[in-house]
Image (cartoon, rainbow, N blue to C red; front, side, top):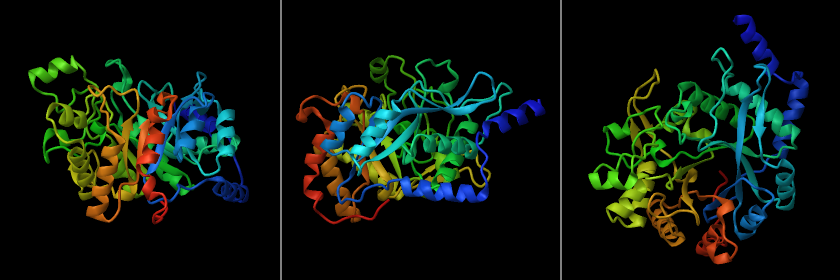
Length: 392
């Protein structure tokens, strides 16, 4: 077993380079990477999966300055020896887009709903986050430094019996250790937890503020018989699982953290549609909670079981859906509500939140009025000629 394990690890280290060659390659990599743009307006960040449709080009023209390509996957081939990066993305088309729009940052996302989590060898072991990062760096260099960084988007599965309806600590450790290594190599690092995976709107010291690896939980807010009738057995929520990654890697490692308020039956949509809360007030409660900090209990870390999640505005991104959301299961947040919340945040703290992320570019409409990137750009137009904020 040990010999098999060593053989697998050695085979997965695809390229051996000397220290001097590595230093030269590292310098070349750093010169290839783009930085997040600076603007008084929030970043407009869009997820995309089809580089051939023309919609990524249009989103950029409309105002998106960060495109996160979904998805790429950590992969161990069937021979149990070769570790690589697997993707169905058209990398040549992404390269065309990258070369055409020099100001746009491109990230590669791992995960996705129903997507695979980090794989294991036949003996149940896996590579460390650092080694997976090395494999990604080789993949990225081979493809012309296509991506300026990575994004974590590991989620659950429609099949509640699937292994990916639960996180493992090994997966969360890989995410944290990969992030640390990637940041040290000059990459942008981000994450996009569903709201239940990093839920700042919980009651302190409640079960909802307690860490869990499960991704098959009923949504916390929908508890009445009427609520249960609406969600019809839906049980795909998590509970503070991404807090572990922040605790281990450190919030400072991440350039931005996008909170998916469009998660199915998320607490946000419950408050707005079932309790009638003003959307801007619901947004502000979350902004205030992340900035002020909230405590996650029951963390499986040796230092302390309690961890304060505290995200500065310079790293906080609000995640929304575009034309596909129904306003019943998935929250519909108007650009005007985001602008008002941004202005209220700026009035209170002296700065607004870092950006607005939307899922997904492929659901952008044909006319300008139905495109989220265009609507956000127009809503924040007055800020683009304003003061320039520090680079993330």
